[in-house]
Length: 168
Ligand code: PNS
Image (cartoon, rainbow, N blue to C red; front, side, top):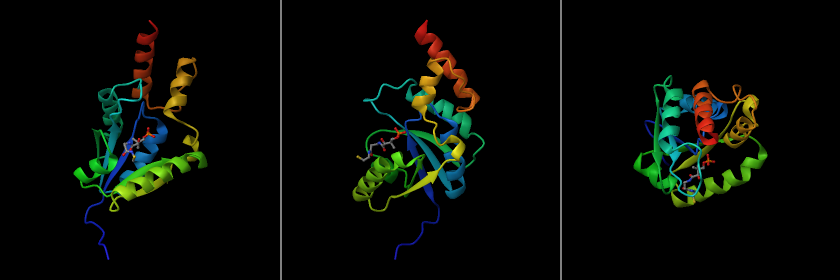
């Protein structure tokens, strides 16, 4: 029988373009489950992100500062390879609605096939954030909507700067 590792190192991977209160809620919950939580930004050359990986990491670092057991990093390639490299055996992902489940299940099972020692856990964010996504926040902001209830103030500030520059 496998033994539980002495220290639970968890990875919360994502695009975080940008971080929302939904992500932050997940970080809060996951930081209580793991001894060490690595919030890892995917360096994905296929997507056209609004913020660079460095900018996303900076925003994440600002919001995870109150969590002493959380750190921010980035990775490229397969999540399982990164997890192995960081000696992490747990992946945390958020499920908002049943529509998220199918893709998340495929990813979790693929990751398990690739590295059976990696376990995925799904956490439900507070229902107040269940409909919030980075994409919707960006759309809402571009169309002049109020976003302060969906993203932390540092992210709102950066969005204002970025979108003002893009549209200038
Ligand atoms: O925030 P997102 O965009 O939903 O996060 C998706 C993420 C980063 C978790 C996922 O795309 C990922 O893990 N990518 C790394 C490549 C990988 O390992 N894919 C799964 C097995 S093919």
